[in-house]
Image (cartoon, rainbow, N blue to C red; front, side, top):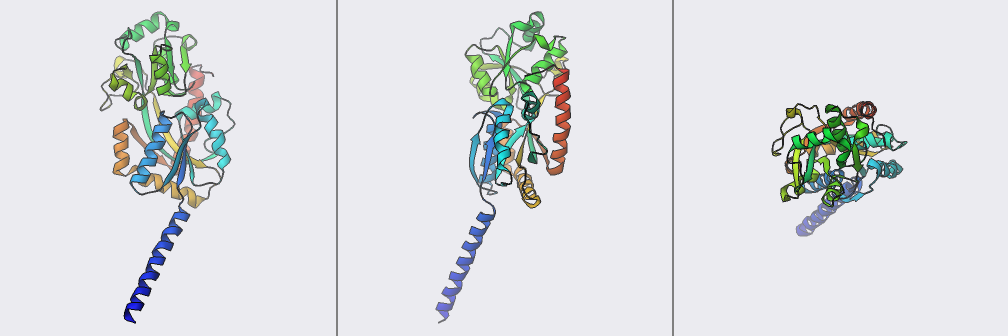
Amino acid sequence: MKDQKSSLRSILMLAFVVGSSVQAQTARPPVRILAPATAGGGWDNTAHAVAETLKKEGLRGVSEVYNVPGKAGTLGLAEFVKLRGQANQLMMTGFVMVAGIPLNNSPYDLTTDVTPIARLTTDYEVFVVPAKSPYRDVEDLMESFKANPRSIRFGGSSAGGSGHIAVSRLAQELKIPTSQIQYIPSAGGSQATKAMLGGELDVVSAGYSELEDFIKSGQVRGLAISAPEAVDGINLPTFVEKGLDVDVSNWRGIVAPAGISTAERNQLTLLMTKMVRTRTWQQQLTQNKWNPYFASGDTFGRFLRTQRSYVAQLLKDLNIKN
């Protein structure tokens, strides 16, 4: 009789544990993460880094990382706003999308049509050329650029993105009219680099994380980085140390759909806060040469509003139009 009671208690305990586990999984379904760019780009790499960290640290399951590329992320944004109220959906965003919204006449806003969750990283622009390029260093590039601006085919991500901004800032510093810049946008830095290696471009400006494999393989040569000071692990001069005020960074963050509850927003904010404190995420930052740039919730929302005004003025000052 005693053994029967003990077995009954064990069965009831097991049922409670299983039931609790099922209930927890139901309350916290796996998230899907939209990378609004092509595979291999900065948003895609960051989305996969988030997914890997959440899974490895046991914080949340990720059912899928998927891509909707085009028009500086605004095509993905247009699809994402349709997911209103779905708290298991997330999307990568960043500087490129802030600029892409006005340049592509997108009707959406990152502070009202989605729910800001967290800013995660920032990445500086690196100028690279093919290994056989006549530009041996950044001084060679600047000399040729000043002599004949239209002779150099620059490339990078979308028009108005951080790559385009960096090239325009360089032109401005060299007293070259931005109307003289020949900038050819691509879906991302890696795509632009492939186009350059195919002879379609002369110089690419993109985030280091997108170019690292090309640099390490010897296919391309780095000339300079758009950081305010030297970056650990990246053996390239900065434009600033060359006397040029070309300090451009490409931040990335994550948003949820509009229409989720305050509790759901708080849960997602806490999830990202826990994630960035993990060893796995710190390893992702080191591996990808990303700089930590965390802000969440209302702080991130205020940052987005500031960015909207800042980028609009920057595009006007640099005469950048799509």
